[in-house]
Image (cartoon, rainbow, N blue to C red; front, side, top):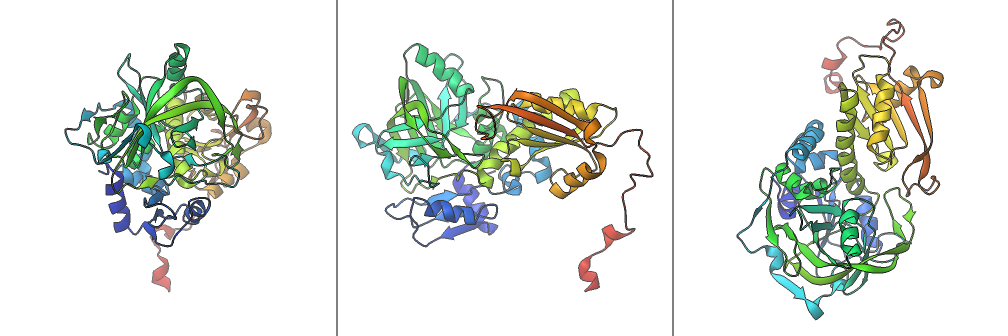
Length: 446
């Protein structure tokens, strides 16, 4: 199991999946550009970042297989494992060892975010952004923690702005802000891929994503207490930033290049005051370039698992869900079902929409279609779909506010049922087949 970033890097190097960039790179834009060149192919380790001693890593996971490898399963079992770990999270134990990230501790006046190699990724980004930080908070009433990833703009040595969407962190922060209290937070940078994946789990409030990660890691995840805040963090992190999410303070944050591959607008956002920075002496800084496979697949796989679970309540014969990369792993879902009753395709569409307000277009296909092959899905649409009978249009529904084509988040949605009718003429839908093709190999004929 890869319970640390360093163990994962050792595996990547052994598999020839780690590109060591020895040429000096500039932290702003150039580092992002090189990361993009290796998107979907390799992890990048930047060993020579101008003006910084600390190396930077990006594309820590870069395709579905690398994500599956990081949690020890084959690609076709990834969603099954994700759902199993969500269903049976494992409480974490505390480590008895001093964690490596506490070998260098800065508190008070010594705190300086600007010493970290935090990039500016895109041309019109509002500034330096932390993009791969696991933000952890504790609900002291229950003792459970919440883990999520947010865009964090560095304002100065000790202050950051944060975009918080109306989810679990916002729920807890709102309670503290209403009482005029600051919320303790910790931001972990340089964690194992399993923790990044678990942080994206779509769960009811009160489920601790670190416990999901611990299940993924076969109970190998240990926690340690922070120095200045009441938060517990994984023992194997490269860097931990501790701080307070302060009440009734807003500063302009943004714009920022977001997951739809457009800029999210600037706005007045909450502020984090940093109280400590703890790091390894030889720390590696992890950044996620927005819009890459690393960024989109981590969120997309979590959404696929959640949607599969939701659809199964309505259509038990659902086989798989794919939220496509072309839709930024947010807006388009392709669903495979083993159809047993007419109308199940449309029920699957409605269930998919109920699972995620972000989804705009849903295509449902039979289980003989490879939903990860865009050509195969298009073939099903071309030969099994008739708009007059199989199209569903929903107007004026709540969608994603980051979808630039929406009206402040209000969006039209379409469902396409590309499943075959059960009373079809079987002679019309016989798929062409070459006998013996499955056993043939090209090299035998060259």
